[in-house]
Length: 137
Image 1: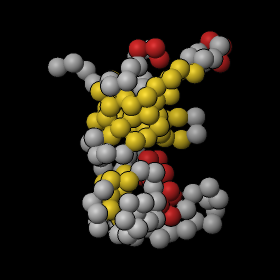
Image 2 (image 1 turned 180 degrees about the vertical axis):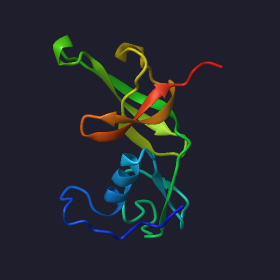
Image 3 (image 1 turned 90 degrees about the vertical axis):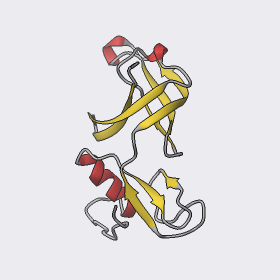
């Protein structure tokens, strides 16, 4: 676990500080989120200050990737534009919610309460976190 870096790249106009660290890790295939060392709560989206207690003592860690679909919707597109896909809010086991999509099943098969697992994939604009349904054991 590392502290938040203080690197500010002038050549990257869209990401600085915690966001830059998150995106750099993601580009390397690593899904990381933050945890406050003061109140011990997990944090997502990357921040410089804990939204729960105001502390600046944040650390990065790799979450389990286990999550539950909180909400889902289907975005309708013509087949020639890639077809339908889902957008989902998922609650990570660590207690944070993030927006993503569930892959590996048709968009209408994604349901609230579905257990999913995170993975990092290549997207059109770089790497991103998506989820796959957990397989029944």
